[in-house]
Image: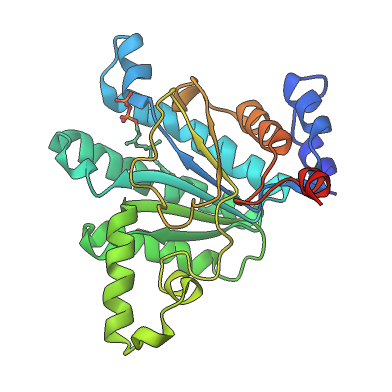
Length: 262
Ligand code: FPP
């Protein structure tokens, strides 16, 4: 069913179609997390201001969100703005916030049409009131959707998330005896969601950059040299196909290896 939905949308005879036909829909990553990187370098290669890279990055966001929804992925999390990104020039920060606002206004219809639920993760309370309002509206209007859960990480870092979780656990009166891994997960911004199976990073950098630190414990990592503004459905499909070739052991041994040890 997911293949049909995807094929209806991909250009017939395209490389994307060929890739989509190779995907094993029984083994899709339930949660894909993406560190969108390389917007600035994409722009500077074209002698454009950095913000043009962010503007072009919106097209990649649109394509990846819709492709994930059609594939039948459960959760997609995009890292859009870290708690460290406030150190960037003020003009760049304001432009990123303006782009986010515009994205939500323009794309809300597409999110609704594609049954996508939108959620924000991060210290939203520190964002400007107009941005908070826009985000809350998009969350409320898509809350009843049952398809892809699209998390956007804004003013987010893994360490602040864990710090916030510990604080809330203490405030909620959780006793030391009750502290388990599951209980910690229940206090994270992603409570109730599956952990990422696949972490994608664009632009060739080999770092996790304080992203979903707790949740990526067993994620497969796939790094592509493609800059984020050039990232499209075919790159996402490449990443998924690579994921499906990996041998996930979660710290154990392959069943075939266990058999030889008996
Ligand atoms: C990293 O590239 C990218 C970001 C810090 C922002 C990502 C934001 C967008 C794609 C646009 C807004 C998002 C949404 C969801 C509407 P970089 O600037 O660090 O690139 P560089 O490493 O080449 O300098």
